[in-house]
Image (cartoon, rainbow, N blue to C red; front, side, top):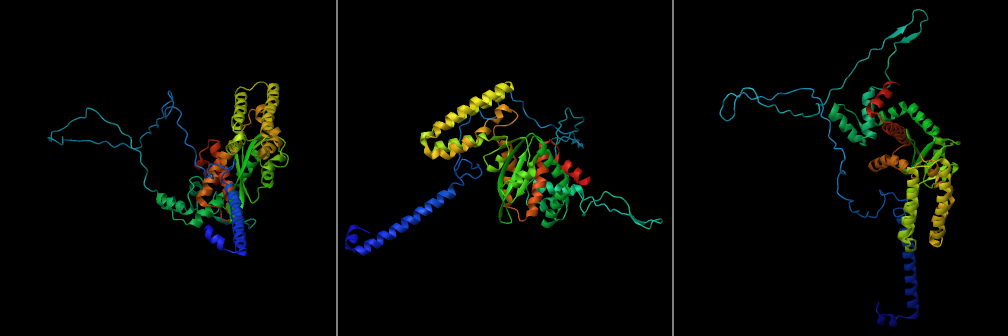
Length: 436
């Protein structure tokens, strides 16, 4: 509307237009606030790279690409041949003269897959008796479990689903292609549930080993179960990785795995449920990311990432060549004072008060790794453990039933733990299923 049109309007019309504009501006401001709130889920210091909407900056390569000088060359070991085919010629293809004995034999090894193998179908005849003395019913002992599929089929189906990350339909296709084994999607799902039930004693044993460990790293991430928000919790030690999937992000999952009186050291992020434990190691990776995030949004704090990084490098250097325990305690006190000095300087920026409060309340837990050098300063062990389930979450979208969550937590716990222990997954899984 131009100036001429505005002059022609009455005072009441102008007031009505102004009020309409103010309502529109208010609605737009509320919309901006809502969109900024949603954007925080993807652009904050805790957003993992998989959820971040910001493009990563391309880093220039450091020196020449490839393995460094002197790195041992990797060559795949040549297998021993199972059969030998010799290719001969009796006559020259050019002049038809007889060739005689070859002056040189070229040796080439070709590896190939066998044709789809037929199933091993075994009929078991189980004798039943009537005792002539006590007249009781006696059944001949046998090693057979429930169902019509043996441990090799169960192990293969389980690994296709949870190690190879195949959806049910693709697992069915793979079994039909390689073994001519006709199954349905429901049959594959039922088999994995049976395997989970059979592995429950091993699952509980892994939880007990985690509870008895001196150091454990813990983390959690969300997953949809029947449309509701559940949480995947992981607890990682040197020998075991335990997953539990629960409808709550509260303390119940931590209590179920670690118990009420866990006396070890827990490596974690800043989630409040871990504060129930007296000995913690807070994650420095989170702290460094938060410092960088603050510097990006507040130019007055541009110095903060460098200061935190310098302090972290001191921690790393001290852990690399640890002095005696008494000196480590003194070093912890010195580094604590340096961290407090950094926070005092950050506190001048009022918008960073949340960061200052968070670091200050956890002051006793940032430098545990300086005294106990077997404790890592970051929580990367737990975050890496969750990545496999995050990938599976991306593939399947979510779980349909709580029973599926129980199956996933049990099977993924044992597959991850066995791989962590350097065991062959197929043979280990098959042996546990055959021994039940």
